[in-house]
Picture 1 (tube, chains in turn yellow, red):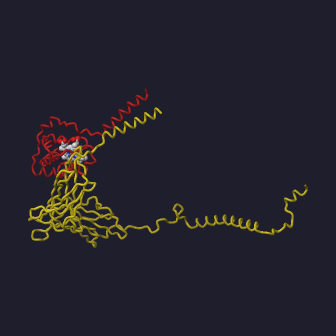
Picture 2 (cartoon, chains in turn brown, yellow; picture 1 turned 180 degrees about the vertical axis):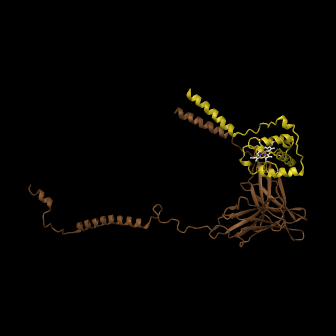
Length: 307
Length: 134
């Protein structure tokens, strides 16, 4: 009993030791807020702004801010034009779809602004980014045995002509069910004066049953172009073998080999046959109304005859 | 008698556990005199700032954030808090003090000296974090 008490005290003390160090978040007025903004252009040409909002807790530490009201503006002829509003999710993030044709300035650039304005819980904050639209096109020459992937990066100049983007860093990935996987350890190419970069696809990439893979080229976190994706299908993966007969007959598998099954079945059926025939005879005897009278004396009656 | 001893041990253990979880960030970060008065040998040229920036993006941004606000993606997992580098409280320090702190580290702040043994790299970082000043 005394030991139990002691143990209890010990536990309490240890819990207190850890819990006294835990953080507690109190809401005190509006919280100081920071916004991070990035621009994404996907392979299907959709354009999105991704926003991450952090707010300081009472320990003055930035934590993801949920349910912050974000207004997204674009600059059109030097005036701000509201294009969307969104609430941040539990991770402090929001993804906002942008119009296909963003208003451009004289340098062919567009400006996106994310703002928190008059939010009851968060201080006003804003972040803006100015980007240029880049086009990425990725191709694979399948006739070529070198498995060379070529990507070309271009932008439009003022006359609407395509102009190569030189010295851009491009990373290569393989599309998987949940996101993309780096195509190789060294998966980076830098574009040359023609805006072209190349990458040699490794041979050990697993594809679907036909060996199809999707190769993705990305410009990532670029100061001028933001994030741009481009995809291409290729039959350069290792075909996935689907095992048609995943459980072959074997002693250690759920399905035993046929001779074993037959032998055991025969043995068991013999035993059961004996039982069945026994029952059959017993029933037949008990139903017989005129049992045959014994013609000879059974040997045990002889033994008692003398009494 | 025996249980009294055990209890004392328990209290000490509990205290130690508490201390291990408590990050001692409220204490001032004392910089040795030698560093406080050290002059920055690397001029804040655009080249130095650019070099500092590329190091910062790779090694520091995850905690300190793109603009030095202390809003990096790793921050929620840290026990200590990276300070706001845009504020006067940070920018008011001498270059030598910043150099010392980032070189030596404390709590979650790693010793930058380890990864970047070359002094010039760390001075470039000092020059870059100066650009966060508002």
